Image (cartoon, rainbow, N blue to C red; front, top):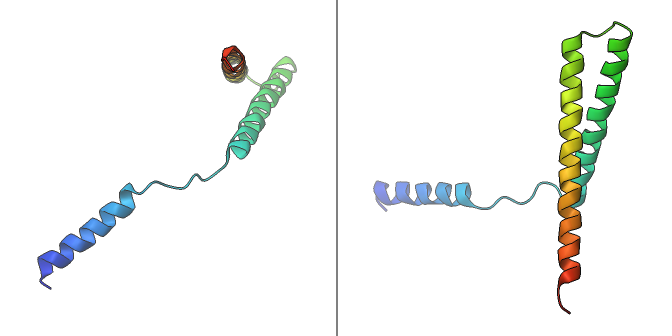
Length: 96
């Protein structure tokens, strides 16, 4: 076996490994659970910052950032809910 064939075989093996599909690291239930936990943490952080701002322990900039993050999280949750409801209604409209 000459060197060029050996190098080609090694390069091919590395390329196959690089393009191989990866196994999903988490399941759907775990992903939804993590998203729900992140959502509740974002809202809790926003509430904590709002309380701290009312008592003078947080600056207004931190309050605006926390409220913007909370608003984004709620808008994302509402959009997701709307998509799920839309998909459910589409399933109900399918002929049997």
